[in-house]
Length: 95
Image (cartoon, rainbow, N blue to C red; front, side, top):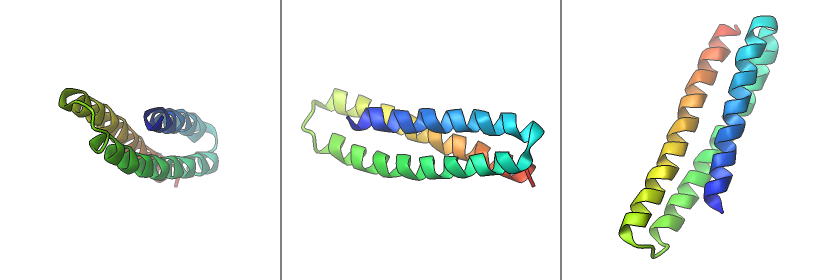
């Protein structure tokens, strides 16, 4: 359940990043507006990450599966952090 939610947030943020890059060439103001949405997606994903990590730890799953799930969630969270960094670059370029 939570894994799909965080994956959706990452996907949405990646779509918005793409839109921001495309908008940068014709409307810097629009690009800056788009990257604001990425900040919100990143905040949601961070919250989901913390709650999902706690669910995984307290789930009682076998250790190998627990470690694998935590790694997947960590990779998704790292991806959205990287998207936010790129959105910050777009924001600076839009100035």
